[in-house]
Amino acid sequence: MKAIVQDAYGTADLLELRDIDRPAPRDDEVLVEVRAAGVDPSVWHLMTGRPLVARVALGVRRPRNPVRGWDGAGRVESVGAKVTAFKPGDEVFGNCDGSFAEFARAKAKRLALKPPSLTFEQAAALPVSGMTALQALSGRSRPAPGDQVLVIGASGGVGSFAVQLAAMYGAVVTGVCGPTGTDLVRSLGATHVLDYTHEDITAGPHRYDVIVDCAGLRPLPLLRRILAPRGTLVMVGGEGGSAFLGGMSRELRAALRSPFVGQNFRNLVSLPRQEDLLTLKNLAEEGKITPAIDRTYPLAEAADAVRHLEKGHPRGKLVLTV
Image 1 (cartoon, rainbow, N blue to C red):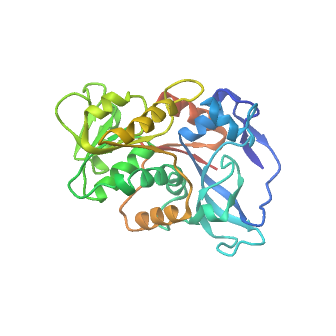
Image 2: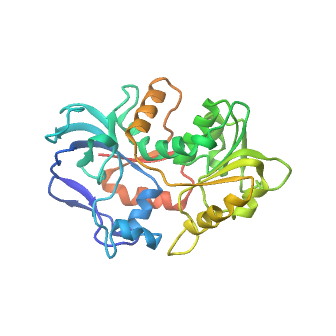
């Protein structure tokens, strides 16, 4: 089968379309014939091995799994001996182990039936970014109707879902994005849209009950300035910071400070959960959320998709078609 393979950490130049053996599902796994795969910052972290501390889990010297990709949607090819929830021919979406390929293994508990109303491309854009946004706006950070919510990086994969979810909960949403994303963010449900290239979002007297920071580049003191006295800041992703810890250095400082101030700081580590996939599936079927897709690329052009991601600020998700 064809797959996008990477033998060493580095740039997108190392991503290679190659013929490899088709994987076989374990007892609790499903083999998915991949039709589409999402491209998001997690792919960049896997590709570069950054921050360096992540290599403990990814592989110290080289990627433990050489096939890139995490989001996927397609048809079930075969199932393991202990899998009863799916059968060959089912259309599914979720977290696959190397989705930049014609076939990929996935644990059955990390898949759900694809919403019939979504294309494979839309379904592939949903799992990682959708679950991250759902978990970011849960618990203490779930806004009440009328709450003021600020989403930084609102035109990106996670941000585009966070805007829709916050608006669905009845919040007054302000989205922060670049000039090319303003129309998209407004169409997703944001009441106010700020272009960070022309406006200082930390200036002025406005305070937000919830801030979801999907960009990860602004210092904590600046974000605290616009956070309500009892507000919640959710830090998503590990962008910026040192080579070793990346954005985790800011998150560690926030975690140490949080017990001593009235404001609440959440360092979000998104976990794949089937119940969240099912929630996203239901919301998509009800028309309450819709994946925003910037553009699609054929599998052979995966490196170009990652380069586009690296340039920053896609308007929604990037997707590979297989």
